[in-house]
Image (spheres, rainbow, N blue to C red):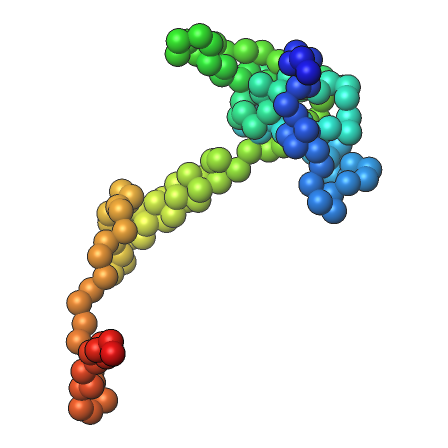
Length: 159
């Protein structure tokens, strides 16, 4: 059997809908507001063929540069040949993109840091001024109290 060379080759599971997620697309997908500068994830929906991105862009994250009635323009970085990274501008319909959650943790940390700075400026005691992220530290040492006599175990000799 010959090799396939089609545009959608190798997308059997990529474009398939998830279990119990089949059927018509929810209206909230169409009501989502996208603005220029938003960070979005490209996730192609196999049931809608119009405005579907190429399989290369599936799973990529980009930034919105254009918003029209029927589609969204997204700038995505694409690796080309030996490590070249080209910014590609693609036009995708709203069914195939979703807001990215990659910045949520960063924005949460910014709010926490601003609160810490504000508390330290007001002179509240007991506020840690270190706002840098630190790796998880080893656990503190502690003593384990035995409930009486210590029982020692040893393997039974094979007979």
